[in-house]
Length: 231
Image (tube, rainbow, N blue to C red; front, side):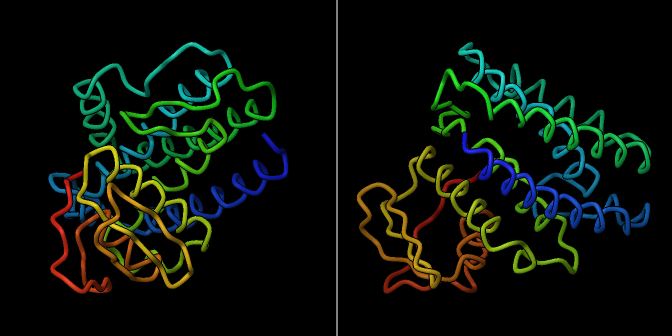
């Protein structure tokens, strides 16, 4: 991996992580158990997910650098159990766990500067280039910062971080067999899903809001918008 690109990705990741931390550290204990855009999760669960995710994604780095296939979690049940355990921690302990795991992930990304044995990984049925593992984490932080449903908006993310998030959403749509669409943004991005049959336009922010959480306020199409598969 180009060291300059990795340094740039990690710099953006630090920025998004710092903004996320500023948001969660401002939450009261009452707000921590408030609802989010992730169905069934309160804010503590969203933070717990990101804390868990940081360590889990290191397994993709292990796969990329050793050639031994791994998945972030042994099972869906193991993932949910870990998130529930972390979410039950006192606020300060949960945030400290998030910080430690985020730092660990960033440190482990340095291994991508060495030899990459497996160039394309499989993340729950989604092909991911090994060099894009940091971008996967950036997307997680941006999307779930939005999910906290606070005054922060995805417009505050770095433009390239927002692009990472949309690309992650597109990978999910492809893996879940979403209807054929051509997605085009005001920033001149374009993605083809399936046969690309229906043109849908927006800016990156609006596209992410729709793909990730079904908010169609800022997307346009000549026909009715297709029904998206759930995350």
